[in-house]
Image 1 (cartoon, rainbow, N blue to C red):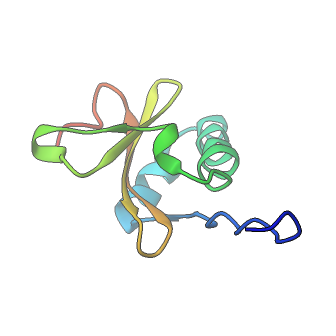
Image 2 (image 1 turned 120 degrees about the vertical axis):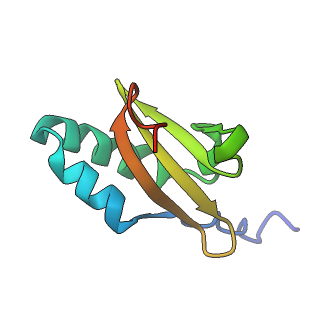
Length: 99
């Protein structure tokens, strides 16, 4: 790459909600909803790599990622082929891992 060539653009990640996660988010207090949506918009969607903020889950949730937002957790699937972070579950840290 010569100095005059622009750098390749980093992929733009988008955040999508599963129907279940959307319903769970709506049940939360308005301030909590804003906090979670702000986190997703500012950190995850604007990041070149959404894995830098999350943590991989293990055991029966292997392959999924967890994001911490205050006392709440977001369980997500990162779809590299579409550059999408799919939110599967939203809940308080005490309850979110139960099924």
